Length: 374
Image (cartoon, rainbow, N blue to C red; front, side, top):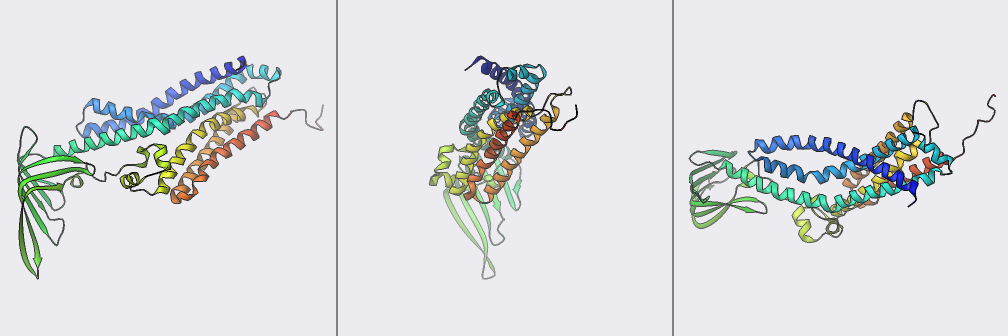
């Protein structure tokens, strides 16, 4: 790589590191504050809060890097123009297309960073975060199981535990479930255990009895069933429980491109939804070089001004907003119809065409206007 390219690339990478650090810090702290409040309210320790905030960091970085690349390119080009270095380079015969080469290399480098994040680190972090959230949910559920007090975890459900043994066994448990108006069931057990499953915490009742009261021919009838072991789902009764289906964003890109039956069953999604998520990840890194090229090409179309190139900076921001708007619109459209996934790549194509058009305008010779007065 020629020395002039290395010089421009070094300037952009230095500014990129600064803007990325600032933007990631602001964005991450904003996310961490809300997460901090939620976890502390649930009685979690500072180590759990730190772990959760660290697991959200890859997603934050993947979102911020394209913006940091645009800011670094726009600010770097403005500084080169303000210190007359850009004028010196153009006077030496370097045209806009030639000067755009190190900027394109810089954008590709940022795009590779985003690709590593969205295809590797972000799915791993999200999967780990989902597992830890399930563990925390079970711990929160267990905290609701207080001995010696009648509890009402849900409407028409009554729970009582006489005592909790040192090894975690629930002694002399009583559950009255009247959620179904047509039947009322009362469970009693000498011992019970809270067991983790894929769908949430389950209460295993040992050496107990189930009494079901339901009307038959207008007359209440009672049926009694004795059991040695019985499972009762308590995860849905507490606010910590709920739907335990995995998110498509927890899986790798290759698995989403060719989803198997296990993945579709775990997420409850269709093959089209899985492929849509994969193509969204493939299209996301393409926006990084587009953002860098827009920040550079837009600032080249303006002539010399004692007031700087802030007008061009405004146009560059509008161009970036237009590309992001098209990206969001394409994602929304594909969300309605997964078969339209090719339009996810249209925003990157529009940004590339816009950048080349701006470079072509910057490369046109500028002379005095025809018919201008002396």
